[in-house]
Image 1 (cartoon, rainbow, N blue to C red):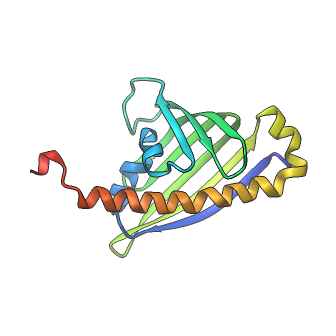
Image 2 (image 1 turned 120 degrees about the vertical axis):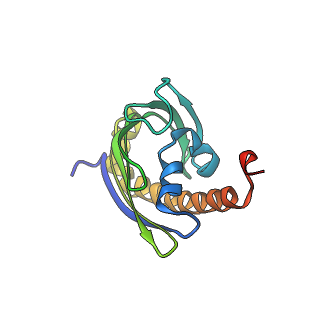
Image 3 (image 1 turned 90 degrees about the vertical axis):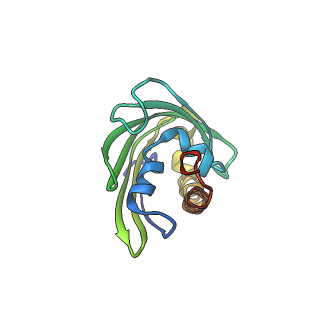
Length: 165
């Protein structure tokens, strides 16, 4: 495998939400800064296809623990409500992020696969030397995503919505 190509397989257990509730969050790129704010600094929609629509695109700016920022496009590639979210990325890294959701007790198990090729020229050039650091940086971001999603869903289910009043 080339030094700038990565594959990460992880799983999250989210007791705070049903598969549909988790899907509603994961399928909406604009929510990323709200629940994964330690990593996703900004997400701006690029079209008017609507949330949770295949082909919808957004520009994202993200940062891990290492001192560099990544800029990329997120495009919804495959969406099955309550079951599957697949997004493509294009920019500083090209890849495919896949989240398969399944019931787990009263919550949700999320099986994640992230296949990515680092394309940003300086990072691609440094990949042979810094591959372990890039993998560590990813492992730093992932638990923050799981914790942020759990926190977001916990708050979303305890705060009454306006139409519930």
